[in-house]
Image (cartoon, rainbow, N blue to C red):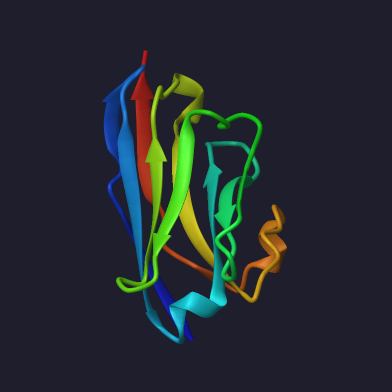
Length: 124
């Protein structure tokens, strides 16, 4: 089992920045590809970014490229999502996820473990 706990969400004005953190406990963190997804009211959960367990290759959705950066600290069993130049359309609940030896897939169904989510609200 892997437990994931997100933090760092909040209310920010458009153009501002936030950094989300996701602390993992349980199995070997370094064996898991970590992902961030988000879900806005009335919409499906969508892929934001992922970072592979081996080599640290990063993937991100076109909608956040150049603005959001995913990173991980295996010593701290933590994955981060640095969000810059935030827009009102980034408003959503952000979820951390883990996929054992994952490929960095953008499909939520491929991730075995999920956190409880953290709310990000961007005001215009």
